[in-house]
Length: 109
Length: 227
Image (cartoon, rainbow over the protein chains, first blue to last red):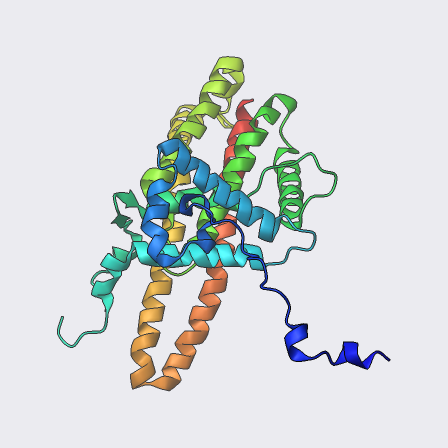
């Protein structure tokens, strides 16, 4: 057993200063949405393609990504459609909030 | 407390986009495109099976010139059944509760069948106005009655769908508001109304699907007469 190798003395065993392993910094606009920090969000949105064609392409791209991740899989279950319908209910609630807030319980009508 | 019973049938707008637009776009998102693969994902396989069954069922009694209508009637069926059942989810908007939309489906499609019949086989199309074996004195009256019934068809188609869905939604709202009021006052009666609400919801799911099927079935019958 090479005990000196197993228990090297501290100064000799310190490795040299490591080379920086991080990737090159990516421009904010090219990052994926989940990687954008909250403070960078306005800059990210401003840098995206906001023309009508670009927006439509964005919608279809999002649909394709969702479809290929949750529905177009070998053993897809009810989860993919259920999440989508739940999102639809949530959006409908948001859309009609201004109208719905008048329906709360109140003491005097 | 709701301000009015019919407030649920409104389509509020956010940033100038009405909720109806989102509700109408839903069927597009729920039904994926056909692919050239041999085995598709489960949703697409289910959809293909359903479409095949439905188209075969509807077009069995129709002769081959009428088969050109297969795409139209199958997509109409999918559209209506999705709109109807998705409208049962909370806070959603059901476009088929609007008479304008249902008449927008009923009148053009009915008129298409009538014009098709009158153009391709006018004698037979007009012959439908007099059932076989009618006693001679009754003929004038019966022709008038059959003409009226012919023109009532689109109105009946549209109003049937609207009325069924609107009535179902109203009943659900009434019984659920009764339940929520009774829960604090008379919990025993509230359990009865909750059971009623559960059964009613099941009925509404069935009605949603049946009404869509009836709409398309009647159109196929009108087509069968005229093609």
